[in-house]
Length: 250
Ligand SMILES: [Zn+2]
Image (cartoon, rainbow, N blue to C red):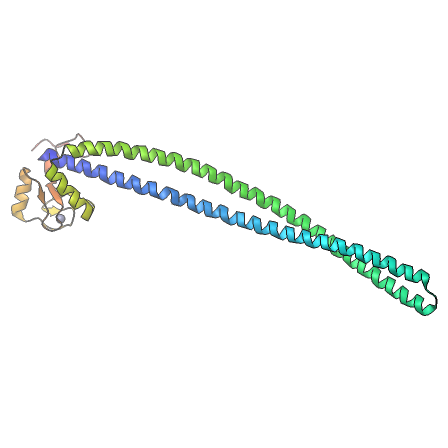
């Protein structure tokens, strides 16, 4: 029976480790999602800034065309000036020429500002594109590391499952069934009893049961938490698994 309990404990250790690794495995893609969101955010920013640049360039083209029209109007006004038949016409043509010239000048100033804005925006876009690339690179690296880590964990889980199945095959079917049932309900299924107290629920074991436990000839469960229990001192004389003390056998 002691062997059965030993195997159960070992089985429990395997199950706990497998559970822990499975949780770690599940957590890995979640981390990648965070980086992916970062990437989506900077990519959206880049797209929006490219849109702004396109809009500014469109406005620039429009202003350039308008400048052509303005210049034609200056020529027209100048022509009127040369054709003036009297001083009244001359004065009017001169005023028009002045006005047209002013609008050419302000249009040119506007265009100069647009050229500056376009250059500045292009510079920002270059920087932004570089930082997007940086996030992309780091994401590729993260994914590579995550894939390797996941493969490593999966291999470890497969190995532990193999060991676990072997251990399970060495436990009597009825004991294994009890273990599995308790494990689903309560997590830790096999616990020690120390000084008459169950390690699982910290309740005292009835003295009669404690005596039975000390004999170690049967599989017993705690009346309070229903976990499989064993007397800790009974397992102590075995140093095989490295965690029991080196006491001489009882
Ligand atoms: Zn208990």
